Length: 229
Image (cartoon, rainbow, N blue to C red):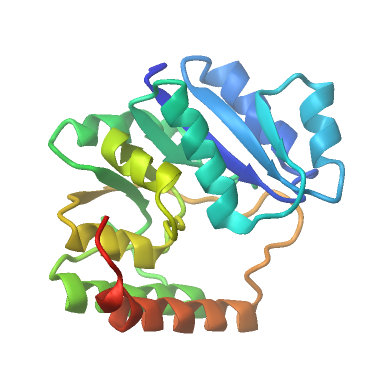
């Protein structure tokens, strides 16, 4: 599976990154990876260097979009055919990568690891926000995505190049919606997303609400004025 690269954005993940990468190395040696250290201020960079992990260190914090773009440029320039957005906090399980790759063979450009494909119910505020975003995506594209906020996504080469070399391609639901409007085919496969292994999520309740409102505004309004590339 060395045609696939796992791009692992990491900002202040000193409590999680070693376990995440050690699992990949020990149990999934067929999967290539690169950790993109997004200007962390804790020991993340030291841990990456001490253990000899494959990594890129950004001198300043660029945020998820800039961090992910760096990883996608690396993937494109190294000749990978598929790239996976893979969290550095221990929530994503590498066991699902093979199934996502297999789904790609059915003619899809993006495959999302979804928590809700099999009808799982979750009425937490965060998941209700995800459903509102899903409704906005369906309203504007006609495509039903059950888990648009899932951060476990696989992209084919065509999508990789857009994220790597175009502006304003953050790995977020509004970009997925925009790509669907451009003709990208999106599928979902069922996965289990674990709780964060350690540390503190940046998506506190009020941050999550602001994120949902920003995504809704972007999908329903802003994306209509975005120039295709």
